[in-house]
Image (tube, rainbow, N blue to C red; front, side):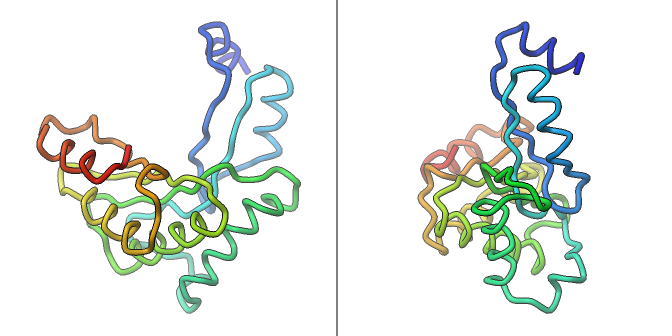
Length: 169
């Protein structure tokens, strides 16, 4: 509460919380903090993994995973009526592995069906961004609905410009 109130005192009105499934996300807690501070806290859905895929999703296809994300967006998260406002996925040092690609494609399909944007954690040091963007574009996502996070971790302006040329944030 102290941290969110301090942010509010500095003009913050909305916080986008990128804590995805299996990451300790607690939307009831977010709602309590939002109610007590007046700051909107918008949760996400998706899976933040550098390679591991939760066992439940290992033998299910991309569309089944997307259906879970869509449920969080359209019906609500964790048995509540609190709905996800965006999708989250990640690629890191391991690169865009088979499991990471599956999560990205599920996020893309959920975005297409619901219209919500995607925030993708990236690791510029191993150049994950271009492949992440390629997957989203292959799936038909509007580049304006894609954010490739952590580009500020790179001093390689041509890497960043290459992503921006694709139309993503």
